[in-house]
Image (cartoon, rainbow, N blue to C red; front, side, top):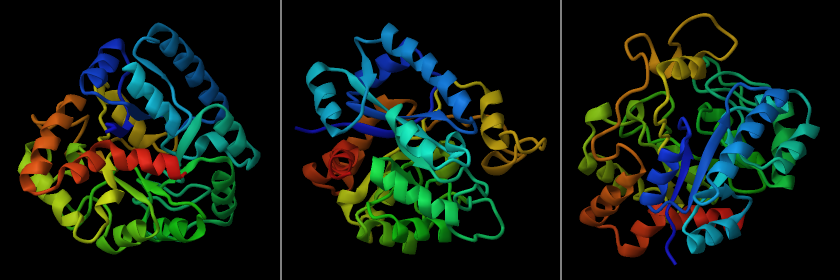
Length: 321
């Protein structure tokens, strides 16, 4: 049985998008439900999702573990796995790690671009690594079953997390920096360490992380995948598209600025890249998975390797965690 999994989307959710994901054959999607929200604000978001699940029960349901990916496949639905792109919902309370897991959280980034109580983000000048609180949070995340996600974290912090965590971690949406030197893309040494530890990399289709941005070609993207597979085990590579369909530009400003600054367009967007970028024409939405499949086979990946990258590798990761 082959699965298709997109291990990161942050769309302006609607029935149209769930229908697109079904048309793409996605059996599971890891969905960002919060960035800078605290615990109480998380509860508000969860109330919104209760309504979304009720209104779209023929298309989606809340996923809790790998068995729900199998269930989604059999029922022609998409399992939605909740994730946080920051540690804000646990505030400074270790006890909230278990509570957010009970509420459905299965992935949590230790930081989003900036220094958090747990680790250093990729936009800080000094990377002091995982903090004391971060070490305790990682242990607790391991215990309850939340995957440590280091997509927006700095290099030392990410290496620290790999070493500290007793379970494999994930970088759900980023690309190797040898191909495109965006601040959030990851070094070869780090990705080797991730692969050797059993961790997963989800390759991003977000244009700011692609060579030539919106104009990135399918061939170029697939060449990047092939070169990455030369130093990472191909079974540790998947897709985390970082699709942000139908989001207004005000949302990307909020993502970058949070509640900690009044400076506009800080970070990945910078002043010369305001708003959300346009997707490459071969991956305008999840239906572009079919183009990636063709591109991966064209560049030399076997059927098994291709299906692994498109979803089976994430399925096996969920199963192992």
